[in-house]
Length: 453
Ligand SMILES: NC(=O)C1=CN([C@@H]2O[C@H](COP(=O)(O)OP(=O)(O)OC[C@H]3O[C@@H](n4cnc5c(N)ncnc54)[C@H](O)[C@@H]3O)[C@@H](O)[C@H]2O)C=CC1
Ligand SMILES: O=C(O)[C@H]1O[C@H](OP(=O)(O)OP(=O)(O)OC[C@H]2O[C@@H](n3ccc(=O)[nH]c3=O)[C@H](O)[C@@H]2O)[C@H](O)[C@@H](O)[C@@H]1O
Image (cartoon, rainbow, N blue to C red; front, side, top):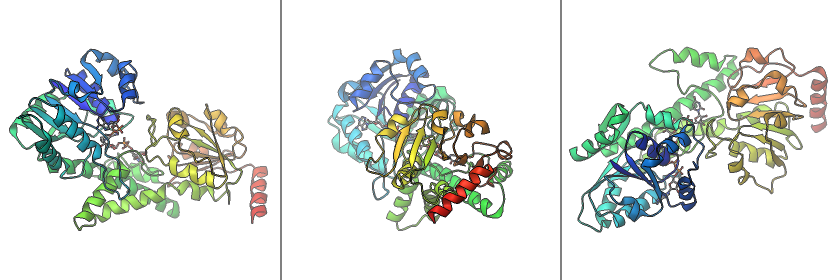
């Protein structure tokens, strides 16, 4: 089939490559000309495992354009995969979706299915249909289908190739048959519903996962108070298939372009309908506070961070991506800089994206380090924000390169057994703090605290 995809972000570009891989001819449209040029040059503009290879393999079935008229020619299916970022009030910004739908109307001269793949509030597809009816310039039949996406960044290609399900909200048999034909080669369970239910499945799924994370984070915080170990607790819970062992990793909370915005958007939708969705609201509140657990723990060692050299390992919101959207680093690092800390940041691929985000007027300073070793050497404190494999491969000996080996791990990267009985302090989330500093360092720390008080 001829498929045109609008938006070449994480969802649009991965969908395009996967649909080409299963035999469709795909045209990608983006308003970002630079991105389109890079794609035409054979470059992959985002960091996503397996994507460059898939684009290269299927380049004979893919075209990249910025012109809608050319891009819509011959398309049997048009898929909108543009962003739906959060607005200040928590609602979703739908201007990109509506803008793309209008462009399609102005440029389409034949019947087609218009798929909305972006995550959109319940009722948006109905609104898109209204826009289509109002703006079509030819006597043609365009049917709107809600087809949300469930991939995760970092594993996007395999998530799409081997997804748990495909959800499509269609309002006619004609649309249902087209969707079946489009996805048939993927051999995945197909959940066919009406459009509003499909839209709701997306929010309900994301928000449930967010809730699960906030729940385990609260259990972790309680474990710390009561002397239990959250990793063991999660393992014990996860064996029960009614609970499941996924999304029970305690840490400094969820980030990324979706859970934060999709929890707030559902909460907003509820309020608009005079309903308060208390569970989701609680997940949001817990997550906001969880980011700062590391700083609270660090205060056990330093009353102020003025002049303190802090190794920050990981900037991206999760490993496997260079995406910084809603990453805890964006909340934690500015707070440290404000307090006068000297940050030595390390991330294997999010450094460039982070550079533009630092507030130059803050008291402290930030240096980006090319290696973990450079970041750790002579540091007074280490904060782990992202569980990159390179970080998980560090050993106690690596941390001993620090001036004061105090490690506060927001992603529970290490077994407690490997870190205890070492001349380092290792604090993590929902587990006891292990290790101790050498006697000299202990005396130093005490003198420092006395000097400050
Ligand atoms: N990032 C993710 O892991 C997932 C995202 N989603 C949803 O998918 C949607 C897209 O998300 P991402 O791919 O992360 O967004 P993104 O921000 O990475 O990419 C969006 C792309 O759309 C382009 N664009 C904007 N307006 C346009 C227009 N009128 N015409 C053509 N191109 C236009 C932008 O230039 C950009 O390249 C969002 O609704 C998101 O919630 C759903 C599942 C997973
Ligand atoms: O709608 C979306 O955009 C996507 O949102 C998430 O995908 P993503 O945000 O890419 O990544 P996740 O792996 O879900 O991680 C999100 C955040 O939760 C955190 N997390 C995840 C799992 C866990 O057990 N604990 C935890 O703190 C991660 O560190 C990360 O900050 C969902 O997993 C996807 O199914 C969904 O399609």
